[in-house]
Length: 169
Image: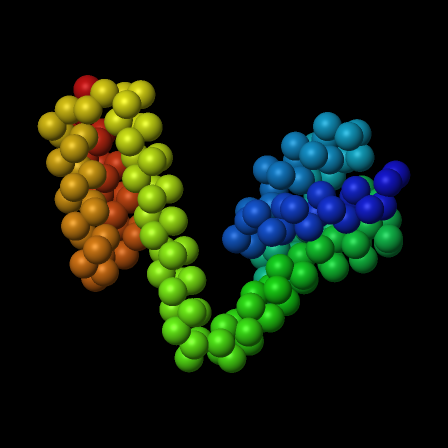
């Protein structure tokens, strides 16, 4: 087993997920493809994670142990701890730099980049599915409610999904 690759796969899964069972699809795809895990490893690891006290993401450590023994558990532990530590470091740096005008400019630029990416995705969805009045109305209403800031994201997504199911063919 290539220990560096093993660690990097767990780190990737941790970095690209939001915790809990979020790393599952990445780890499942990567470990099964390399023959380092079988489906029963995932079932056992998730079961251990569910019955264990503490955060729900600890199943990843069990998976590391089941696939590579103690070294696997230690590498998986390290991989799931690094992303939160990186967040703490970024917050600490931001706290020191937030009073500088350049910091505000960079953050404003990031917001614009994220909004621009969203617009590109929305435009490609419209282009691939065709634009009609109902789709456009759902998007505009969701955007207005999102910019208002009082409607939770989950409610926007649920409302748009329900509207799409009810009024789109």
